[in-house]
Image (cartoon, rainbow, N blue to C red; front, side, top):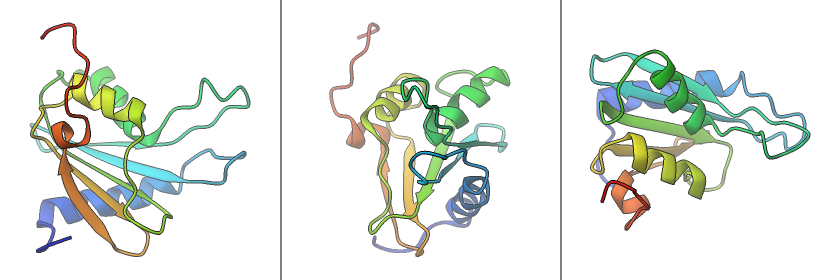
Length: 137
């Protein structure tokens, strides 16, 4: 955490915090929200959705990304994503979400990781998953 978040990044963190309240988490109780910014300036929201079978559970980051794709936004057109959870340190994406971001987002796209206490850190997709698997490389 050095410097300040930009106004746009603050807006994404706030949106992620709001959608976090919609999370369906009857098993873990661990609510996560995500807000994805696309090239046109639209924000696509996502929250985690759990399932008793565990495998069908979907993380907030992937929900936001899949929603944006379903809304017709092309892979590679995303500008930033923010995630938030009730953690001691800023929440980081899981490995599966990192791989999905590596597939759908530019490598230099900012990932704003935050928690409900107002702490944050910013990284990039590539920094979070160096050497990501790809069939295109």
